[in-house]
Image (cartoon, rainbow, N blue to C red; front, side, top):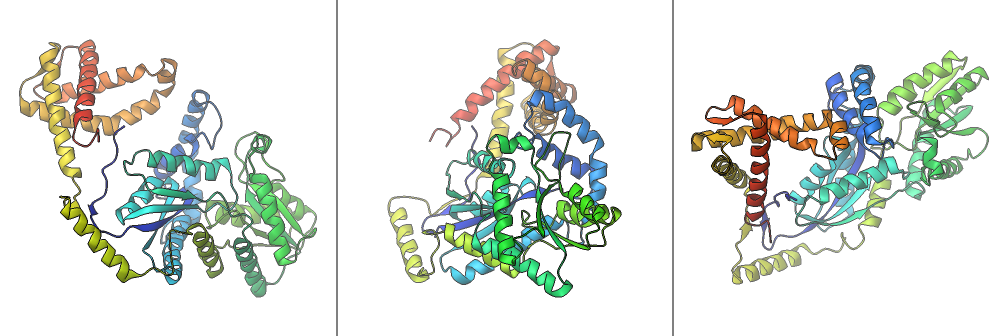
Length: 488
C-alpha cells in the first residue's frame, strides 16, 4: 500500500477538530460528458446497485451510452449561474456552519464539504481538513434517514480514504438525524413560513427518495426512519391526520420499489379533483435535480395533467437559518470533548511553544516539509533505473541510453495513470473470468505501446513485452518498498 504524503507539520502547532459535511454529489456541468462521468461512478457503487458486477457491467455500459444526454438536459433545466444547486447549497452550508460554530466554540475548528460522487470527493475533503491541522474529524452526512445506499456508501468511501493515510485522524461518523428535534422543527418551520405567504393546501405530500423494496426486506431501516420523520413533522405542523401522505420518488428500473410512488399518488390526487396539493421533500438537505426537476416540474405536470387544480413544491431547508441552527446543534452534540467554549488561546499558545522547544531539545526539526515533488522525481529516476535493470536481465528488452530510460519511465507512468484505468474498466468481465490474470496482458500492452513511441526503448514482440513488464513491476515494487519512510 502506497500511503499518501503527510501534510506539512510544525512542532508545537495547535491541533484542531474538523467537521466534514457530505452530500450525495452532482456532475461538474450539465453536459453529457460530465453526467456520464458522474453516473459511471454513482451507478458502479455496489451499495447503489446490488447486482453482481459481471452481470451489471454490460447493462451499465448501455446506460452510459443512452442516458447521459437526456439527464444532462434535466440538469440544465435546474442549473444556476452559480452552478449546480446541490453544490451551491453545500458550499453555503459549509460557510454558514463555520460561522455558527465559530460563535459557540473558542477552540480551533475547521469545516469543509465533500460529495460521495463527483467533486469535491470525500478524500479531498479529508485532505483539506488535515492540511488545516485537524487530527479529529466529525463526518456529518447530510442524509437525515440512514440507508445503506447513502450513509453506508459514504462510510465506505470514508474508510477507503482513511486506508490511504499513514497518520489516521480520530473520526466520528454521524449515522442519522431523522428524529432529532431540531431537524423536525427546521422542516416544520420551512413549511409554516411558506404557508404564511401562500396559504395552506388541501393535501400535504411528504416525498422521500425511493429504494428497491428488497432493501426493506433485507433489514435496511430507511423506510421506517422516513415514516418516523414524517410522523414527527406532521405532529409538529398539526397535520398528523389523513391530509398528510408519505410517498417515495425517483424509482429506477423494473423492480418493485418502496410504495406508494410519488408520481402515481399525484396523478391519483389529480383524478380525485384535489384542490391544492403541496409537496415537501424532508429527506433532502439541499434542493437538487430530484426536487427541482422531478418534483417541482414533473410532479406539477403529473398532478395538473390528471385534473388537479393547484400545485406547490415547498423548497427544502437548504441553508435556511432554522436548518443551519439544527446542523449546528447536531454538530456540537457530536463534537463533545473535541470542541470547547472554554478554550484559552493564550494558554494553548504557551503550551505549543513549550512543546516546540521540547521537540527541538530532542533534536527534532522544526517542521516536516512537503516533499511530494522531490519524492516524485526520485521515483521517476528509480523507475528509469528499473528499466535499465530489466534490459540488463532480459535480452528481449533494449534501452539504448539513460535518457531513453528516463523518457520511457515517464511515458509508462503517464500510460498507467491515463490509459490503464480505461482499459481495466473496458475489459473488466475478461479480468474477472481470468481471476485477474488479464491485468498482466494490459500491463504488457502498455509496455509494448511505450516501446513503439519512445526512441531508444524497444521490445522484441509481445511476449518480450509481457516478460519485461513483469520484471519491471517486480523491480519497481521492491524499490518502492525500500524507499525511505515506507517501512517506518
